[in-house]
Image (cartoon, rainbow, N blue to C red):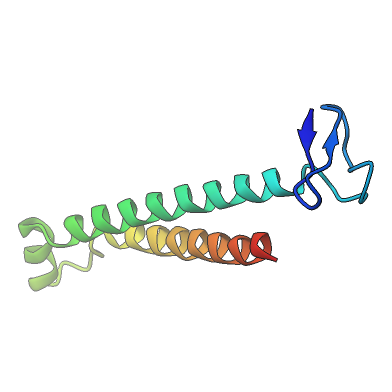
Length: 102
């Protein structure tokens, strides 16, 4: 038996909507899945940012940048991907947290 998130009515395990209030029983669990995925994406993005920062700040890349060899720093792509992943992850978490509280 599953409890409805809206009215706490007990429903069969196979039920998709509540028999009493007709609310979607599975809506809450899918929102939590998106929140977890967003949090994982934000953590991975933060790791990529830190890795890219460490690649840009090692002595070899500092010397290449100083003497102008024309190469980009090796950590820059990691920082771009990490920043995008962090931003998308945070937006997913914030938007879904706001919709779950309604």
